[in-house]
Image 1 (cartoon, rainbow, N blue to C red):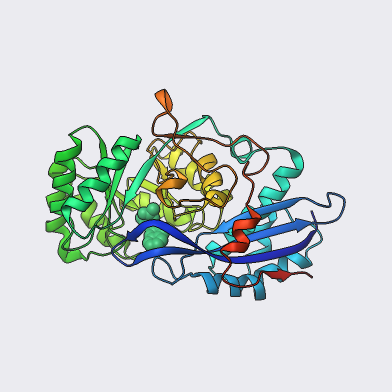
Image 2: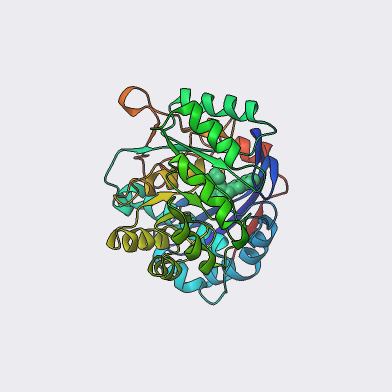
Length: 378
Ligand code: NPQ
Ligand code: MG
């Protein structure tokens, strides 16, 4: 396909409740949407994608205005100049830029959406989805106190979520985990995510999580520190799962071989796109490493693609692919994600329409815009 234009929309969406992690407390999700139009013989195809970068460089080095800048000045010009662009060639065409995986992932996903809409194929069909419904978990932020936390968790359990993930940090770990485990019973899947808040000195303390039968502990130490994750994995019974550290299939294989991670959180934005995500999935299946789909508080645009990815066979643990209502009163798409009922309680249906299968609400993109759209052409 020949790309005719790439348009960037920066929007701010109110969250239904503040989301607090070891690194930030947010009441609004600021995000970047990418909209591509194709010309040439397939003229008129359109694709949308969501960049998962946060407003500030707090989860990763990337952030919304940085992603916008690198797309505007480096990535988009390379794609707009190319005579033929497909999702499969976005990676090679943008490889001259070091890093900026979230920005590249958004461009690749927008091109993939346009390409699949033109051919009448769904994301799930393209990835090789093997299921129509995916198991959903929910990520629960750090609360002001234990009562508030227990109220929030019991609400999610009633909604049907199949797994609870608690955000932890030094000073908010063993007690909330014990209280939630006591409330939800021994069998409900429970895991924790530290977002890099601990150090090697905390290994003995983190062993205190072992009695609570957790599915995993996610990313206790900084992104670059593989060796301390190896030390923790050897010292505790709870499986260690990397998130921030896993930026490519190569790093995933290194971390697996070193014994730093026995489960992997796949976030398409963090690893540079859905194609790299499928490569990580395939490598993990080969190594018998379970994977699950992470989340970045996506709107329906990013959520639709994540749910399709989570329908691959290696995604054997429930993901952070929660319903739209977990984060947003009104989603950016005409088909908000709602948990199923009956045998599909705690699950989301994999979209079946062409591309992501969802339709962006232009009215909301305009209402919540933080700036005029940036239209890029050759
Ligand atoms: C994680 N996500 O797995 C992330 C981190 C994350 C669903 O737990 C605002 C504030 C937006 C904090 C997006 C989940 C955020 C945020 C993602 C944290 O590590
Ligand atoms: Mg995480």
